[in-house]
Amino acid sequence: MTMAEYSSLLSDLSENITNEDLEQLKSACKEDIPEDQSNNITSSKEWFSYLEKNDKLAQDNLSYIEHIFEISRRPDLLTRVIEYRTTVLKISEDDEIDTKLTRIPSAKKYKDIIRQPSEDEIIKLAPPPKKA
Image 1 (cartoon, one colour):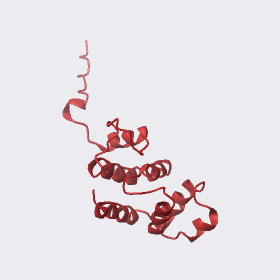
Image 2 (cartoon, helix red, strand yellow):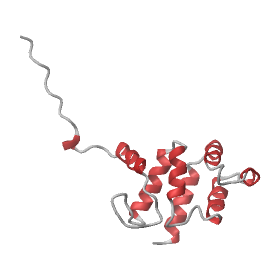
Image 3 (cartoon, helix red, strand yellow):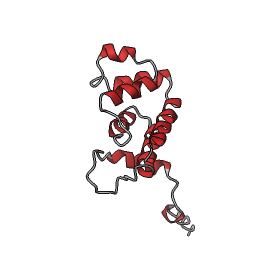
């Protein structure tokens, strides 16, 4: 697992967070960021580095931002984090391994929404009943 993949995840997320989004994300974690600190955070990169300094974020600890993206209704960002977690960290919701990551059941829900159903899963509609 490399720092490079983690850095590219953060910069990818940053590119998708506007100033408006940032305000929303900051308000979602206002219990964890004192207001005077929060006012000094003017970019998503600063937000991430604040979280890192306060042990809320690390390359193998993403549950906090998953939670924040979830309550901020950003399934797009959440999905990216989950993809990183499952492909880079090889930790999926199905692995019953004891890690620092909290299980977030609704993260699965988002993944299912985004995943295209396979042929078998698409329920074949029964033909309309023939008129008697």
